[in-house]
Image (cartoon, rainbow, N blue to C red; front, top):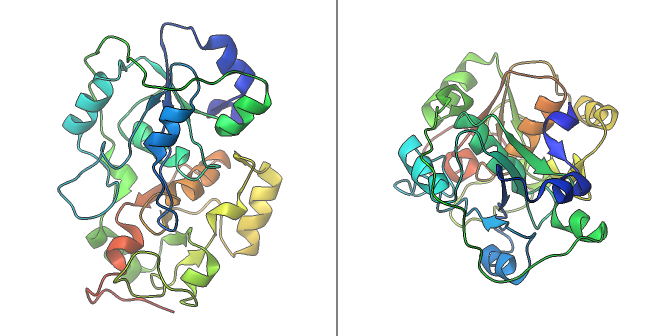
Length: 279
């Protein structure tokens, strides 16, 4: 199952000149350390890799970070990056697996079939002895991309509230335990502390190591420890919809095909909006 979603540095190195291959650095900074990922990409990237800005290829009409774009926005952005519907897209990030799964989820939600993540990210690429480059990257000739957006993959606030009321779908929160338990303030100002009622906590960073997911056996054990049924229909959430994709991808790797993502996550739910919370 891992091979269906990841490539090794050696594989990418061997295929880097394939005419159908597009490499994307999809790094996004955590809210606790908002460094400039584009500048870091400019300073060092895998050869040919373009920067995929998840806060720009997004629905910017909503005052929430990196919300899933509509099909037209996505089509325009990726077409200009030389990505066609049949392109093999390889995603990596500068920071562990923090943001690569979100970009993978965006592409799959837009109906893209050939998208994988570089296991270990750019650090694994360098550790394997492969060269990096700096400066801007000229994209290949523009394509005419047509997204087939799978709206069922993504949930909004109204849909999640209904699921909370029904109490039949497992909700999994990827934030750190201290934030989930209202023991630490949210990094985004103005948000309440706590979690969506009846949700379970699976801190995303426990699932990964050195830019890769832990083994299936380790993932299963971690979910079990948190009281999470890896086979049950689930909704993942986090601070802003970023690391919710890490948990979603982990469950996907374990064979769960009924996992959806709450896009607004705590950045939306945690506002002073009367939505129910638990601490």
